[in-house]
Length: 329
Ligand SMILES: Nc1ncnc2c1ncn2[C@@H]1O[C@H](COP(=O)(O)OP(=O)(O)OP(=O)(O)O)[C@@H](O)[C@H]1O
Figure 1 (cartoon, rainbow, N blue to C red):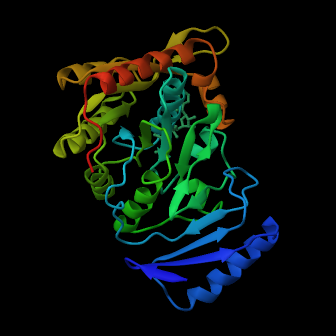
Figure 2 (cartoon, helix red, strand yellow):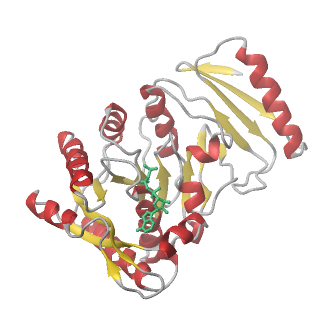
């Protein structure tokens, strides 16, 4: 057991124990330590073998420290944020499929689920139930579909456990997801929490993404929120890579006729009026929702939707190739 920078770390050797015994020990230790009222406790359970899979022999769970800064000299990949002004517009769906399409285009891409209050990337990327390992005080990502390394609070918090940290703790949790062992990853797609409040502002300020993709649905109200999201990034000088219009046109699964329940073209007009690139339009389709819920991002398959995500990814890659500086820490 040790304490550094206000973080109390406890390393428990659980070599030779099965998952049930490991869980029991962790639970017992946590409840014993709860009486001490430690604000920032990190428990690492180690064993002789290291894997990042469902059968991991090393697992990590922690309560984040309230003030976290990446170790000096640590290098992290370039961060590409995916943000939205409001929830439910398809930000996580876009982030997952963008990462998959970038990977298919040959980019060494990773994915961070910064939506730490409602992490959905483990489900979208087919990595539910996986637990990251830890090495030298840093997390080792798990692998989602098509082998994309990824980290999400959903991999660390117990299933169904409410995640309700205060702002600074949220920032710290994200710090540990970003400042991880990313290996040869050059670009990290970051799924931000929805909204434009203090938590989002602090995250963007602290982690300084190299650029941001803004997702919106076509309605006026959603677009007003998207404008607020753009303003948030601009406030801290994060370039806007462009806007994406999601749920744009409903494709009937029976007759393939297209209708526009939320209107269409609003995000493209908004992007032009704000002088930002328009990256593309993703239709509302039953298939997209079903595949997403099943942990099979359509960008990994073939067909129209995969082609749409491939085109989007091409534009994001063009942005990263346009002599943009990486993250300067
Ligand atoms: N183009 C689409 N067609 C059909 N369903 C979609 C589409 N985009 C997103 N969805 C569905 O809408 C729901 C919300 O999407 P998603 O979770 O990606 O949104 P979000 O903006 O990240 O939401 P949250 O605010 O909860 O993080 C999901 O069930 C998803 O499968």
